[in-house]
Image (cartoon, rainbow, N blue to C red; front, side):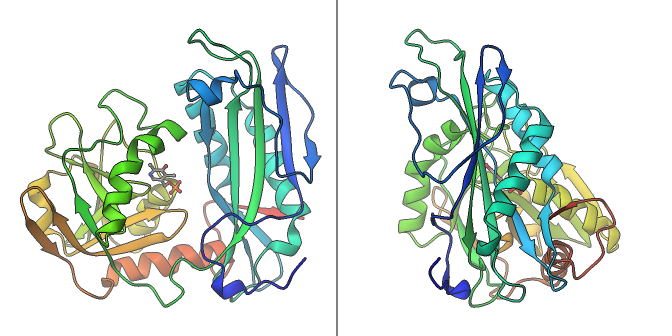
Length: 337
Ligand SMILES: *Cc1c(COP(=O)(O)O)cnc(C)c1O
């Protein structure tokens, strides 16, 4: 293993030593298999390639000051993957297999877990694909579940800093009654044109409005949205947003630090009333938002060049639990031997 510069890792694919695989054949899941190959052998007719039978997860493991390895909210991710499987008719993966595979992948690649204090972590990418060949549109008869991991750098190597979002009404990432609530590759394919356009303009992501009426805030490309005002943490309620586990955790913590928490429809008109805005997800925990540009109406909303006090407090609190600096009062942590 080469020497890794933990602080300058960024977020990208990086080879580690092992990955874990599990096959579904003849109506049942097999044993976990450990592989050191980065490639898979796939039938050219696999439904994952033609009809988008693919779901994934993203979670992290952290090295604590005490030398213990902590995985954040493993069970929640296992459950969400099951919902994704239901949503696109794939064989459901038992939570127990998900948990064992993730823990095994982390422990086999222990050497790649960034040291405490580097701000980096081990990103875990489980995915499940339809491998059985079908040319008529129907669910595959065979599936492959895989887990691979890679060290990723701190999301904010130069410090916790706001970025900007853009509203582009001509693009939707998900249909009103569609698959937006499942963590499936198809939603990401649908969001790439708008996402690249946003990046080219210097924005970190697109802020999507609800695709039916364009009246309410949905979410930001790959992260959930929250706004804060009058000591209240407010996050959209919608059938087409992906239920972020980070958001769920922040709602719990917000309540604990004395905020009110509201999950409800957030009308576009409410944007200028927020004191703080953030995007939340596993990658960054919180990405504070400094400005939203509405490209269609040529309006701008400003939230400050520095992260707001509540966002900063929530960010540090969640990170402290992940690294084991604060006690895990909710059973969010799974230790890995
Ligand atoms: C994964 C994801 C998120 C963030 O979810 P976390 O569980 O917090 O990582 C938000 N939105 C979309 C569309 C996602 O795919």
